[in-house]
Image (cartoon, rainbow, N blue to C red; front, side, top):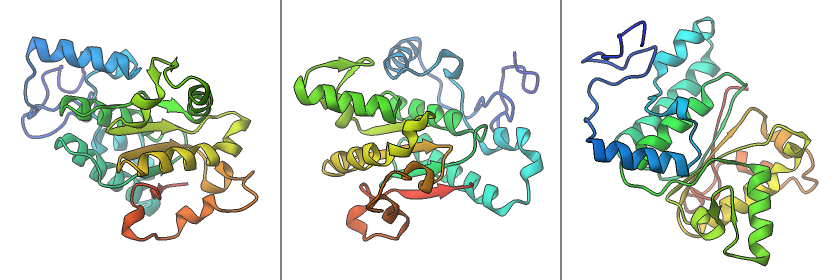
Length: 234
């Protein structure tokens, strides 16, 4: 039971504590059953089921960051992209969000995934960069091989794909996996969204060629899916 809205929500705004949106379109029992099955396929934790992200929820626990222009810009961008998902659409480019732990990345992502599923889009399970690497390697020998509940073709061809950068030492080599993932999905014109608590330099510290760091340089429009927009508050 929410201590702010008593689980009933507000008619004019999203509850800043539980994220309940009183203006949302009610779902039938059949819709809910279908959505729950899709959420389980996408490995969304049950404690995130039905949780709607909003900037109000973020500021409740980060009030001491108000006035920090970097954080405010980051939250503003989260809000803009979330509004695209909540309106039943997908961003027309890939995005990479970089922020410290505890900055609402997962809550935001799971909320976006639920909006995309509700709108009928195919959403890939959220994998980390090491899991993606394993999937790519295994599928090169056996294309139909299923790992973490999904096969290569289904993963690559999903309408939208969210991923995280692994927290182990392997994060320093994540750049190659990210490049490969973006390149494969760019050829199909599909949106990819990445989440990381590490900076571009940390993700690519083993990149001797320096190619990955070029994603921080503005790119022509035809690379919108291959070269992600970088939204950072690091």
